[in-house]
Length: 330
Image 1 (cartoon, one colour):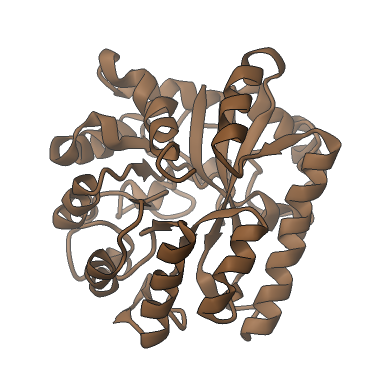
Image 2 (tube, one colour):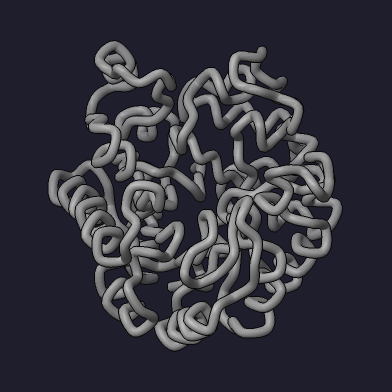
C-alpha cells in the first residue's frame, strides 16, 4: 500500500472544476488548464494508493476574509463527504476506521482519506477547532503563506497570540500539527507550545535547495528542524514538485531526474532515520505532470520511488511509516 500524505483533491474539484471521478486519461482530454492533471480517484486506486491526506486548502489570494475562507473550506469538505457516500473513498476518523480500512483495502482497493487543513484561515477563531474535528479533520497546518496564526512561505514571522491559542486548542482536541509551510521562527515556537503528534506532510531539506537567503528558503526544512520533527517521532513527506527538488529548475525546463527524489529522502534519513521518511507528493498542488520528476506521470508511478530507497526501507517509505504514524493520531 502506498500512502501519500498530501493531495489537494477538493481544491482540484471545487476551484479548478476537475471531475476526479473520471479516469485520468479522460480528464486529461477534457481539462483546459495549462498544468496536466496527475490525479483522479480511479488513478489513485489503480496506483495502489491506499491512504492519502486530503486537504482543505483555501487560496488566501482569493478568499481574503476568514468567513469566506470558512465557507469555501466547507464546500471542499462537501466534496469528500459526497465521494464517501458514492463509495469512491473512505474517510478515516478514528482507529476503528483505520483498522477496518486496512482489512478491506486488499479486496476493494478503495482509497481512504485523512482530512488535513492546509493554511488555517478557514478556522475563524481557535475555539472553532472542535467544530472542524467533528467534521472529520485530523491534522492542521497553520500556515501556507503568512496567516493570522503564524508566518509562512515567503512571509516570515512567528506565532501570533491567536496562533498560540490555535495550537492549544489543537492539543485539547487531540489533533496533529503539520509543520509544512511554517516559517522557522513559528516552527520553533510551536515545538515549545504544542505537545501532540507532529509531522511535515510535504517538505524537503533546505540544505539541498540553496540553503538560506533564497526566496523560498523558508518553505523548506533546516537540518535542525528535521531533527526536531524526528525527535517527536514525526514523519516527513517528500514533496515532488521539481522546484522543491532542485532550486535552479524553472517551468519549461526538462524534468528533473527521479534520482533527485532519492537524494532528498536520503538526506532526511541521515538525520532521523528511514523509518521517518515518507511521501507527500502534492500532485496537482499548483503544478502538473511536466513539473514532476521524470517518470512520475500518475499515482501508479509512485512505486518507482522505491528504486531510490535501500531495499529494506522501501515498504516503509512508500506507506508503512505513515501508517505507523497514523496510529498516534487516532
